[in-house]
Image (cartoon, rainbow, N blue to C red; front, side, top):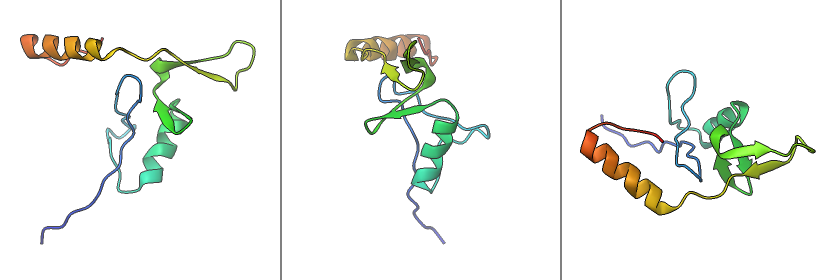
Length: 93
């Protein structure tokens, strides 16, 4: 029997990194499981957007306040894609 199942994952809204849990899984059939697990592993949700640990800092005066780093210009991702095509490797800058 072939069946279809919807899967959910968490992707950083700034750098597009995909969350991977300790078992190496990047998706789950339960939408809230992956989101909760990512948040337990230093990912942050701010105004409905998700950020990996590399894309935010904490306010020095208020540890509860998250400061999202400036957005990355789309041309950076174009450049990254070109480098990956030319080298045949997947490089994260």
